[in-house]
Length: 343
Ligand code: UD1
Image (cartoon, rainbow, N blue to C red; front, side, top):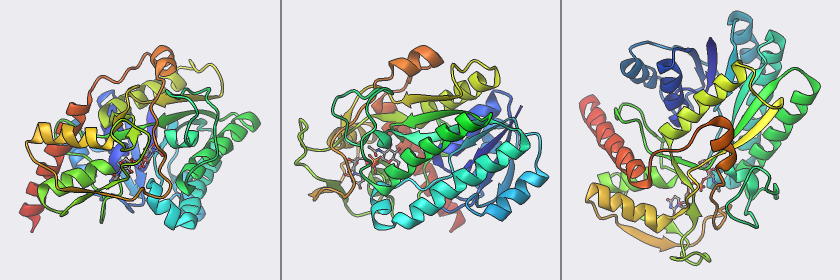
């Protein structure tokens, strides 16, 4: 079975490619390398002992995408990770988010449909729930207005997929990620943000290693036990494994409808300070941090009801917060060694 992984050199995509290849799938990666680098393909080959096909391609470019699909046939399913994903950045640059995240999806689906490759796993986000009225949030919870352009692109993307699934033979599964952190146990792949990280975990590890002077904690006046915002952090490897289950489900026609949606989280919420303390415990390093104002677009708290995914997919997150922060730290140290060698 040949699987197209759009955004496969990125943080989540690369972990997913490893899990797919280890399960015997043939993988074709396309990525525009806007937030990743081509060397990730070497690391994937090192972990799996096999090299996936890789093509530099911007899916938001309609002509280039059509050209790719004209030459590359026999794709059984696509997994779409190729999107911008930073809440704060999306507030500052909304058009960049709408253009990239929506065009890439439309071009991908349009060409898949033409090819008759009608299986899509879409990388969605808990951000579609906005700030939920009740916690934990389940797939049946009300979709409230998005709090950021990033969140809106995920809501609109799900609507587009839903409508196309009704109008055509497309089958799709949207996986609503909560907050993926951590890295592969080999420390050969992990999150490698280009420039200043937007997300919490890479900012913590970069502060610990000395690349950043101080971590800003965005707000300590939220209505949470320690005043900092709460998220459901999930190990990226657990997340990647869920994608393999989703692909298998689609390809073996086990889906209960043409468009299915699952929450991917652990079911537990942790505050920013709890993540920080876990990191300090596993690394033995004290993090220099300061409390600053809330970040635009951030919600207060969210964590997942995972019972539907656990039951239907037969999947459950297995790794805890300390394993997440520990693997993120091992990756940051490995990255320093690579950077030192290449200097
Ligand atoms: C959001 C989405 C999540 C998605 C992720 C992709 C929501 C609720 N969640 O995560 O589904 O996978 O984007 O990027 O929309 N923080 C700091 N200092 C920092 C960075 C972050 O205090 O330097 C805080 C944030 O304010 C937030 C928490 O850490 O409370 C996590 O932030 P981040 O890692 O950026 O992810 P989200 O924006 O929650």
